[in-house]
Length: 203
Image 1 (spheres, rainbow, N blue to C red):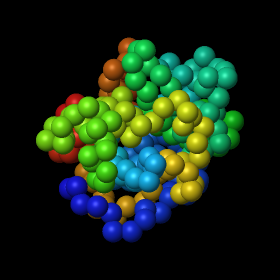
Image 2 (image 1 turned 45 degrees about the horizontal axis):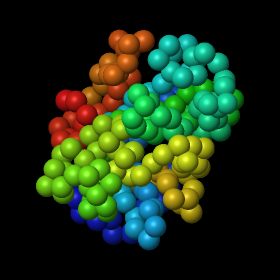
Image 3 (image 1 turned 120 degrees about the vertical axis):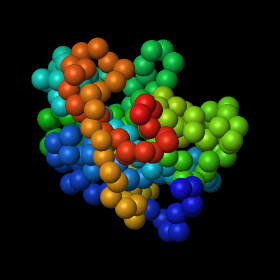
Image 4 (image 1 turned 120 degrees about the horizontal axis):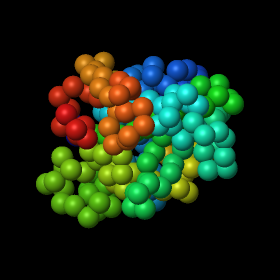
């Protein structure tokens, strides 16, 4: 489960994100988030996501139109959309759909793969508390040192300090549920998770 990657993970193509967020959210499960912090590389596997569909999705930031704050989510595809929430933590999303069309995917939980000690230190946790390390959107950004400074970063470029990558992880068994932690459009089944993975935010 926590074995280190044997080779440098290869970035996902921009075309992967130039699609309906529902497809992207499902197919991101099992992919990797790669984060470089100084000389150290942190790697985590995506195990839970949520899709956000644009102006007709009342839970999406884009539902009220394009602003300076949310412009990344309107494209081009494959870029990081990072925002601060509840005055306490950041959330990481990736833009989807063609340039000019709003849509995105929220990363809700990841499974630590490499750089686990650094993640634990960033979260002020003991390594023995591994199951609590990245099982939530705010937890994973803290563990990976992701902040608003990463907003707009091209996540398909392996030269960046943050990118999304392929993995040889077997195709996971996926469960779809309503989104959680929101009040608007909360009944839509747009949350995707790897069945049985201990790092999902809520079973």
